[in-house]
Amino acid sequence: MPKMTLSHFEATMLFSLFTSVVLGVVTKRTDRDRLHYGIYTFVCFFVALLGLGWLMYFGHG
Amino acid sequence: MAKQKEQKQPLPPVAEWAPALALSWLIPGGGHLLLKRTGRGLLLMAAITSMFVCGLMMRGAMFQPESGDLLTTLINTGGFIGDLASGILYLLSQWLGYNQPDMAGAVHDYGTKFLVTAGLLNILAMVDAFDIAVRRKD
Image (cartoon, rainbow over all chains, first blue to last red; front, side, top):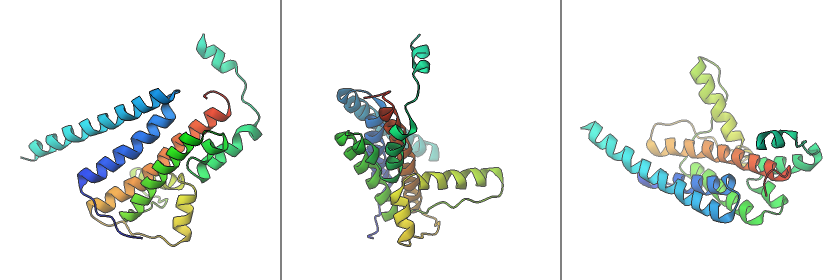
């Protein structure tokens, strides 16, 4: 199996994508709500990623 | 009121929901496919399988149940259950001899988390398949 080397950003983006798809599919009752929730979850992951990234950047000095 | 209504609904016979639940564990998204939720089943299958394969490609480590102090037991047993929840993906990787030692490095660490999370997401898919099979959800 080929080896995959990803940056922190790429790995977390992939993680967010797969997790958002599953959360969107299993959580809501209509396809429209599923799509909205999947996108919402992905955006939340992205915002948290940026926020925590900057927090660590400034916290590290 | 709605809660009381929900509680009064009897659970259908085991034979109605057990095959979907078992298939859902064995093949991610398989329970949904069995219950004729093709689109959702394929999405779950693609997402969970991709996550697991990415974990393998990042050379993540599989957990083995270990006893010791409480935290070690909790992490290793929990991680093992998470790995095992991926069903055929986990079994195949073991049968084909995947054995990555736990190594230092961000990518390996992400891989380990991807492998466990794929299993945890499959547990969510199993719960959803169960809800569909017992007609709590469409």
